[in-house]
Length: 241
Image (tube, rainbow, N blue to C red; front, side, top):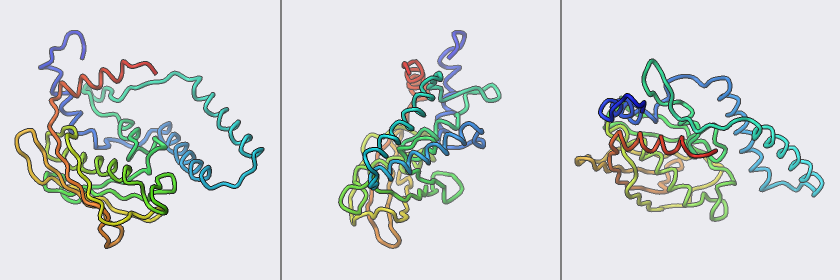
């Protein structure tokens, strides 16, 4: 918010941004595309680190190569900028999506899950997330850790509740695990709005491997006022890198 703007004037800008922060508005820049390629390599490196039979010398050589790359990146300025001007408004930056630990292509912690909307994008639509979890996400032998399943449900249900038009933040998330979720196999998350009561948005979801129901989820979200979203962004962007 600029010094000359009142909260009432700036709120609609942040409201528009918040309602659309699950939506990509443009193609990746060449720099972000390269970041995604690096994140892909880091995901592959994590899987190899868990399974490799490399010798101590080979591991040390690999460590030095990785350290050299990290040192190079650390030499450049850092930024927490999530939003920026677009035709005079505070439109969401695509890097906000790409930094997500669940769907973010730039974030090597993510699978990343591929999201889509089954429907016209209105409240009755269903959010669909496709994912294949690798060994880095293992809990029980050969199966996905339940904590990751809950986190991915939170993302899917969070996107579903945003279709209500007044998105908010998670208040409660309950997951019932029905069957082990296998590693290295495609799975599908689905989420939809069950009801809206004032600021309270109830959502539901499922996780399937083929025809097998692996888990079900229920979530309660409460709509966030635009000025609160604004305040969160300002706090984040003021934090040291």
